[in-house]
Amino acid sequence: MLLQGRDIPAGKEGVDLAWRVKLREKEARDITLFSVPSSDRFEMADNPAARAEQGMALYPRQQKALQRMLDIEAEKVAFEEYEHSQHLLPAIG
Image (cartoon, rainbow, N blue to C red):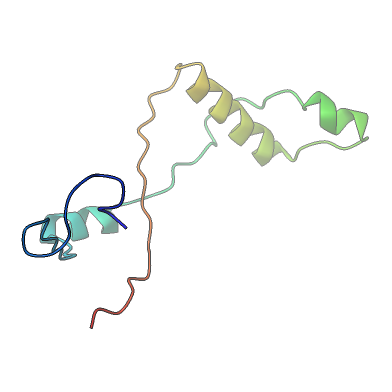
């Protein structure tokens, strides 16, 4: 699959591909320090119009979280995004 359409011959004259997945000790320590920040210090955002039209309102904690997200988008708040994912690796054999 990796070689399709790339004009690279498969086999001994082509590309040799090998990989190993390893979690480094420092990365393992960093993962344990991961925390979800609170939105408690933020003001409450206005209830979204779509919710009001349905006769519903966000809870106060949801309004604070919404305001935090709006502030992040407006770059009023420092925010660093991390992506983590877990995947099953197919058996190698």
